[in-house]
Length: 216
Image (cartoon, rainbow, N blue to C red):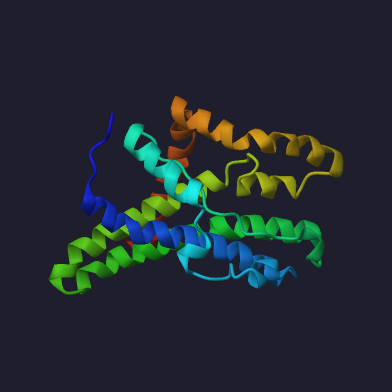
């Protein structure tokens, strides 16, 4: 059964979604370059052009189908390619590249909180759309931060955890990776993912409110 499509919500959420995806992926690439791997740069992935990061299936087809036919929304961008052997410190490079994307989403959540605070000072005709866009920006980035930091491969949180594990434990942990996306989908459709994530998402939104002084 098709769900109702709200064009206004779609348009207001579009920019925060595109920024959340592109900055997240570019952050991975910049972190990789800092630690010595220029693969992403050589392949043109150090850009805020969303077309460079869009996966036709994960960023377009899957989210559209899930939005139309289910109460859930799920998707992914094209992963930034890295070659760990190029890192001057492999463990630290892997660790910092993994966390760079989610941290960019956390920073953007605070940035959109500031945008919400500044909405009162723009021309009146722009106050409402900017305020609503900022609300979506805070929520989307808070959700992406928490989702990506879940300790499940191939999510960033899983890669972050893996960078601390000794070799034998790491080999065992990586066996989860082929099933990681299915684990997340099952948790999503069962409702458990929301129950796991929402306290953390709410905590981030509360923190944004306290730091920026806004009431989202």
